Length: 110
Length: 115
Image: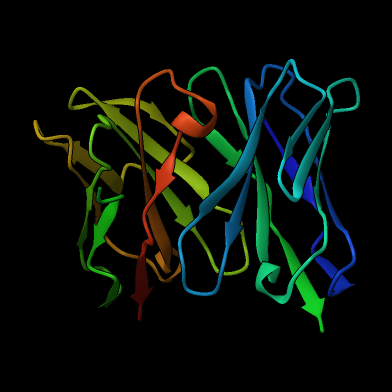
């Protein structure tokens, strides 16, 4: 079955760049997403990339997709303390089901 | 424009009981999906409803059932509750076939605790 893997934890200093990585297994994925979850809250869509794209930039966020290696990354430039949260990558199959990774907890130190 | 609303926000139930969670989709959305998020884990897909029918189902037992009403709102029912059913239950709405930022809008969830 499909599987999405993420590293558990990332710590950066305020102002540095953060890179969160994700690997997936379903080659039929149509879209790949990055969601942010703050404590006690639901999921907030940050950005997405269509599976035939290599890169997408959206203000401080850059998504890179290596379809051959099934590797997705999210780069946050000039990371702020307000970026501290859990970040989930998710892949969408042809049937519109999302499969999520286990989440990466980002801690931003002042 | 209201997003996805879920009720209740928190719920405590006893093992063996039954529970019903409710979801109103974002205005204009007609497809509702339910996800279970156990503590410290990513959300897992339960099922999706479109045109009042279950369209797709994840790897969950028959104790988990749902319904979609003509106004597109949805209910998730869980029978014979187990301690392991304790989780945050998330509802997401969407338009069928839409991806990217037209895709899924999540509610804030219902925190279910089974004791």
